[in-house]
Amino acid sequence: MVFTGAGISTESGLSDFRGKDGIWTRRDKGLPPKKSKHFDEVEPNSAHLALVELQNMGIMKFLISQNVDNLHLKSGIKPEMLAELHGNYTLMKCLDCDSRFGRNEIGWNREVHGRGSRSESEALGQPVCKICQGRIISSVVNFNEPMPDKEVSISKEHSANCDLMLVIGSSLSVFPAAHLPKLAKQNGAKLIILNIDPTGLDSIADIKLGVKAGEFLSLVVNEIKRLLASPR
Ligand code: APR
Ligand code: ZN
Image (tube, rainbow, N blue to C red; front, side):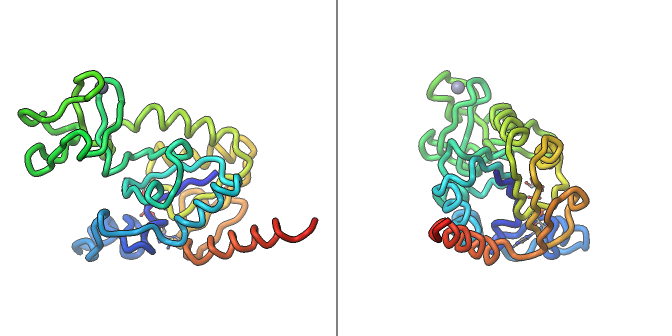
């Protein structure tokens, strides 16, 4: 299985948080974020597409992501193969029955109703859940807010039972998400970390690759295809 962070989306033109030019790295130096495209303007890159190939070959059994940029779903990852632990900027959710809706589908207008974060008070006349009339909020999980129960439990289940966990583009510095690769390792999985900078779990990784994800994963997929095509 695969666990991704903001680093898998930098080759699409988005900033990460703690990389050399990350949003928090620059903030800590008193610098504004680097000019980055908006989620609506970017496309999946070769790293995202490599994961779709691994999904379609039946090699990747499940994908956990901390990213809210929607690029895994946009690239062709099946919703049932994915847990977005920090939510998805295109999705709103019901606080009562946990149903998910696209912003347009539910009639959420950010100019009128605001961002819809859990901590904001309800906007007058904001859309309610189509299923149970419950309160609708953004699915994006902000710091100190709980991660979605369903996604957390299925991610723990897969992490505890996989034979290989591949981490791509995460500093593994935000918990509880970063516990999952450790859970996999503790349950006997091999741990491979593909990340340019050091991460919090490098010391327990079986293999650490400090390379760019897009180029490297394309090579990996081509090599797997070559091996699968050559007679045993
Ligand atoms: N290839 C490989 N690694 C890369 C690439 C790339 N093309 N680009 C960046 N990286 C690496 C960086 O070296 C960095 O260590 O990706 C890592 C991204 O780490 P973070 O910026 O900390 O992102 P992430 O781990 O996803 O952060 C977790 O923190 O701010 C919160 O909610 C936010 O979901 C986010 C969480
Ligand atoms: Zn509901």
